[in-house]
Length: 454
Image 1 (cartoon, rainbow, N blue to C red):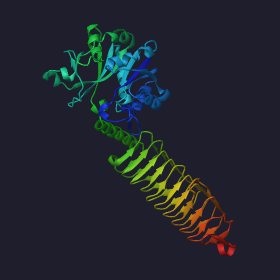
Image 2 (image 1 turned 180 degrees about the vertical axis):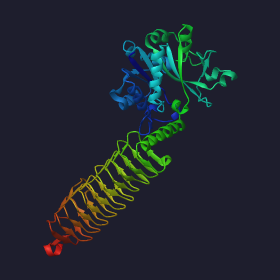
Image 3 (image 1 turned 30 degrees about the horizontal axis):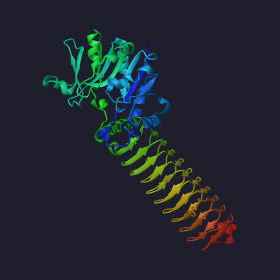
Image 4 (image 1 turned 30 degrees about the vertical axis):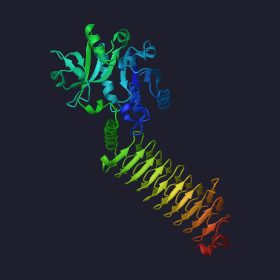
């Protein structure tokens, strides 16, 4: 099998995006669009993968890292010139050279694999990807002879009305015979008026050499989307989001309204989970089986256990163990951790705190920088006062404690196991276990006896 190298062209200015962010770093379904192209190459087992960069090269390197090697196109002089910059990294290491683009995230890896298989089977100088579409998308037209062989590529601006009527379009994705490519690529002539060098001219060189040009024609124009504007960015996002949602539903996840459900490619969801409309799942989020998420929910970089319930809430960089539930209008901030079966009422908020299994947290409460034991009851409006204006401090609440509604726990403070804090208390000192405390400031009033507890 011919050794495969991939060149991904990603050096364009992206001026039509009107953005300070490099075009290929704009996210599509949660990851920079260039990473979709990197994944396409990785799926083929390509080595090396060479990313041709230019504008904002350092930022692109930062996003891609060691997943590619880099060639720099200092002056943007067309696709042919861009590929030439990768020659030193590919020439002695790849017998077949596949050319992809950093702004084509919707191209399916399976399609690229079919293109490569055709190239290896037929052994031509070039195997190109084409698409049938009545919307020209600005692509060149593919001309075939009477036997159906590719005989030319004509750019749209140079096409006659008869050629413009053709519906087979050149996508710009090619697989080249490596030895022939590096011999002939330097012979591509500049094209007026910009005097740029284009890979489309390689087809004419191959035909002039008496060599075959094969074409894999696809019917799904969505795969050929190139992103140059925010409008096209949204189109690509919609295409990939639809695919992600379909894959999840086929794997046993229920999406009540897929068109109103936004799930990143990096999200993992277990079977029999139900996702309600207007839910956004982002980043490295993992949701277990049998959960109910939404509606009107945002979850980012979080782990949600089996049979959890998240209703109209925001969860970010947090953990919910099995059967935990929050909402509506709850907020788990970074490092929040709800143990198994924890209930968090509406308008509650937890930040950098662990609530052990069985704890119930009432509505309108805030727990921050805290460690809460098992089976604690936190009444409505209870607050841990964790910030003194300069530093954050920790509140510790022992198992089985009862925190009355509207109470304030001024950290650092420890509430002992089984203690009871009266409603509206302001606790500024530690409360021993099995002790009742209330007042402003709260003072221990009595030890809870067995009869009291009963």
